[in-house]
Image (tube, helix red, strand yellow):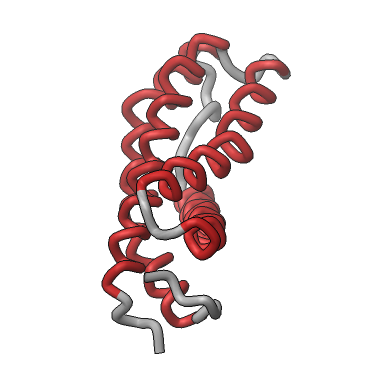
Length: 147
């Protein structure tokens, strides 16, 4: 059951738990699929798509922010329409289109990646969002941290 009132403690704990999945998924997708293709697109130039501690820290912040947006949108939708599979699909698709589709289409449109990379990154990122919203759905259903 989704609380009618927003409970920050519950939101924060669920965000931290789901961010583990989001971080694992993002890192896997980047290192296995994205980085090699972006490097190849730029002729394996030095400094392109490199990862160091500073970039990794920003990436961790980005993933946590992305997770918080996903969890909040899921909570809003589930509050209105119930904690069910439709809420998982609608909220995850909304966040996916708002973040990933816009980012990757803009990146390819500016010539910063190959259009073919969208055939890999977009389905995998949609799966990431659906699984993240599903985890949130199950965690909200337990109602452990609602007080």
